[in-house]
Image 1 (tube, rainbow, N blue to C red):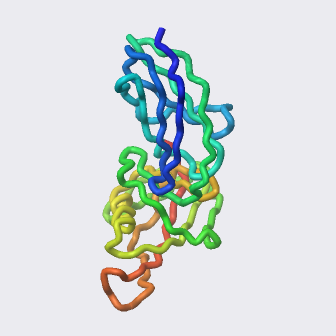
Image 2: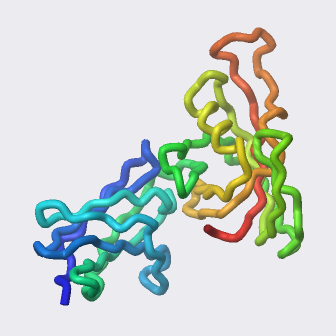
Image 3: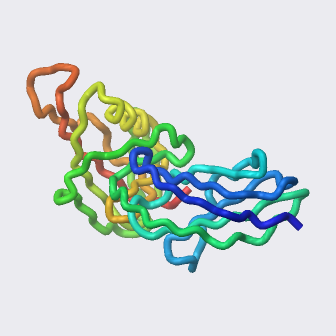
Length: 223
């Protein structure tokens, strides 16, 4: 039977909106599967990427953890087709508290959102209502099932800034995204509308012109 991973570590990187995980693993194991719990170990979700083992150590990055709250992770190793038991969990209190818009399949596109929290609107909508889900291009349309909330975020960006460009890239095509809020909640969402509603805070066009942009999402099924 594969050996149980030991000496688990978890380190928050608020600037990346991610948590770096590490463990010691016996030589011979091939990969390590990681899981996360957001409710004190009552339920666990498997991270998307199993991590390879190098020189008796395994490391991975959790890009989908909430940005606030006490979170736990555990791991098990795979050797010769058999899994070990799960390790004892490692706990970490996350304090970053930023809003993030994330693409679970392309973490490099993840971007922090500069949100006026007092203006955030969250409205419950009828479950299973079919709505039109739009990407940034008005020519791309898909339909999806709404799970629970319509979430409106007033945010401020700078045209030409990497964050603005990254958001634009996230919304080019319809896809399911993860919205991590500053209070520790996460939602699986699809964008409604596009970035054409941006209003210039400064009528003088320039590379540093600030835009006040309202992003609107519908909560959808997780991916």
